[in-house]
Length: 92
Image (tube, rainbow, N blue to C red; front, side, top):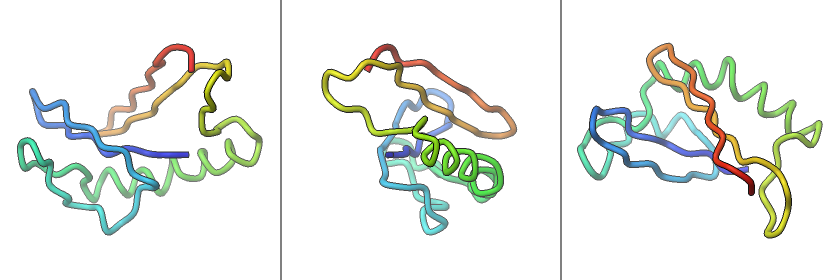
């Protein structure tokens, strides 16, 4: 299951896919605007709240890599500055 780092700077829409979110990615600069793609605060929340939930979802078969032709809905979960956003991206 892939993850992504997304720039939260106003007006910047850069987003990059990563295999996993890791501590060594903290402070990685956005190639578009130079802002951090992952802050310490966002990483700490990810490790404490989101990673355990995603691990359980994987074990239950609820979080899987999409396969061509498979039915389902792509969903992304994003956290920054105390705000969690869940987005549906349509059928996958």
